[in-house]
Length: 279
Image 1 (cartoon, rainbow, N blue to C red):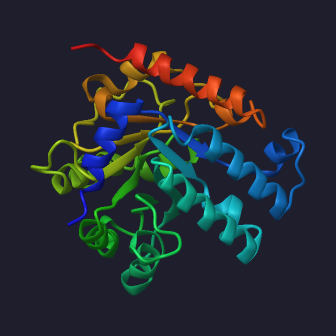
Image 2 (cartoon, rainbow, N blue to C red):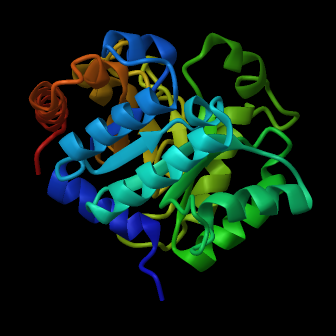
């Protein structure tokens, strides 16, 4: 039986630090790296990031959209990127934000969480805004395959508030409801549940939310979006040990020099460790 994602993530975070580095080959970054905005540039970019960082970061988070825009050849690069990153010992969180109902949700899950899929990843971001229950096929496959999910709960984009902060009839808002669902999924799991939430690091004081879901909290927004590692204790409070801070442009802008990429990732990792309470 495959070891659950939560246990594998806990070990990777303890051994390598909790940093998650995005692989976001958007056109402007390819240009900054002196690469063409084409499949060859995409492949060079992705291979450079993986080769530079795969032995030292806990998690890579490739953004599927930046590969999909090149069609089947871009998806082929994504397949290779995922396989090479996992072979080098890093966990891969596919940022695809899939969400649908019934057989369609099951097919999305199979694309990324079925073990014989070319895009098989350790975890997948998903959107619950067709109802949390719509994620059931992905949850079932994640349990079967030892993978994980990160559910959009309290995202940092301003547009998210109109959905995530909407108040239900029971007085609880939608974001808090998603956190409660995830806490239920992770009940009794040790050392960490496999069902995480996406909670923006730029949101400020979240003390009114129960972030103790016994699962990981993916925290985008560190670096270029304005949050710093020093902000994390204030935002996440007692749940900080389970936070997986995501940095993309803050690291990637230092490429294509592999040494500069490594130095930037190590600097962020050190700052994140220093921000965490000891003991």
